Image 1 (tube, one colour):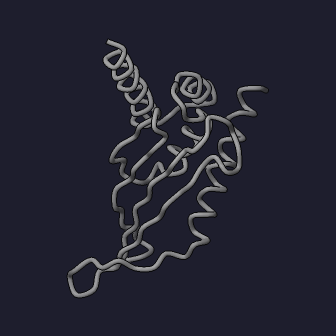
Image 2 (image 1 turned 135 degrees about the vertical axis):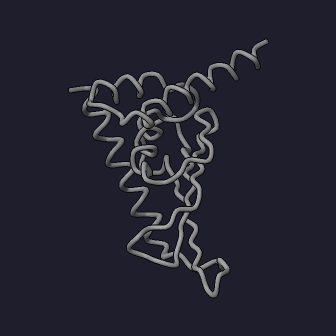
Amino acid sequence: MKAVKAGLAAITGACLLSACTMFGGGGDTTEQRVVQDVAGSSNPYLWRASLDTFAEMPLVSADSFGGTIIYDWREFPNAPGERVKATVFILDSRLRADGVKVSVFRQTNETGAWTDALVDPETAIQLENAILDRARNLKAAEIG
């Protein structure tokens, strides 16, 4: 019975988060509400900030209890023949600099076949910093 309740809570949380992103987010009030609604072991500010930072990427799955967000491949117009995907891991329930880890994957299209390509290690660090900055802003907006 506890497992069913936990599953329903996870589905409800995911629906709340996806509805917020699907319908354009809203202002600070919506962001504050979403941050308050996220339950589980993940830090709600890091969770929301991760969704905001990767808003342009197609979402494959999101598990707020496990702290994992998986994004699918996306091509960008300014980099033809190249696509990227990412996975975000929220590692702590506290808002800490080491509480988020981003893994970035890149492929290039060579003669019609996608092949794995190197990713600059600085890319993941920059994305982690962007998530942390957004999370701090969300927390400041809630306090202020």
